[in-house]
Image (cartoon, rainbow, N blue to C red; front, side, top):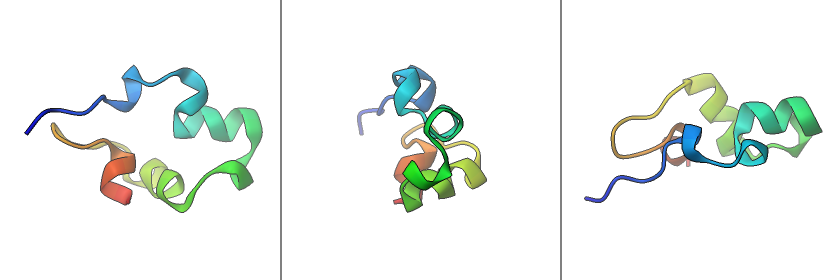
Length: 52
């Protein structure tokens, strides 16, 4: 299985925490909110992927 990009490799405006701080919590998807709670993913999936 090919590794996906880690959230730290995403553009700043696409990262859940930064998106929340810049645009507000209402702009986040349910998966992005869960990703913030989870905190981190694993070797194969980002926290957002796991949340989906």
